[in-house]
Length: 148
Image 1 (cartoon, rainbow, N blue to C red):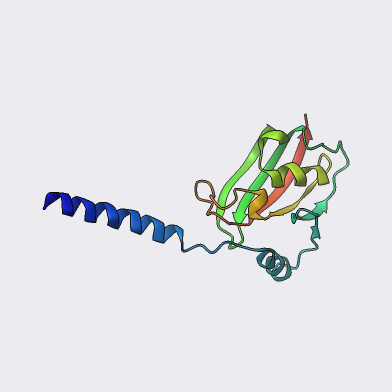
Image 2: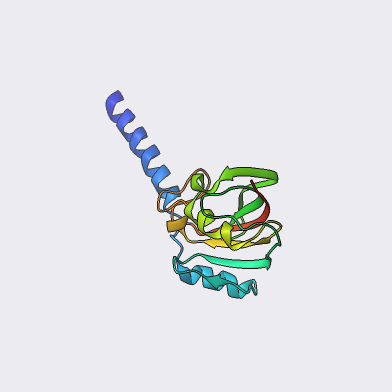
């Protein structure tokens, strides 16, 4: 009897976890376009499906996809949920970040500011990461402080 109770409890826990994860519908390019329209953004689309908004191009050095950069950023989901932010300056090689940053940060020069709208295939994919659900579009407000 104890074994049956154990199996029922484990099944319930596993089923509950999978149900909460399945509440998030994977997002598509149509969701990005709707976000752009609702927020009245002047966004450009790259061939990979990354959308970007350049609010300030900057006037310093332009990084390459392998540069070391320092940025401040705020990362949200399309619904505005903040999943990460750094206002002190995050430094990394662009070879060590998600593909959306590797492609998108080089659109700016030092001092540049804008928005990256990153489809899930250029972010954390179908698996997600931490509080980011699988299939999520990521929205990053970016300020490129320096190319190191």
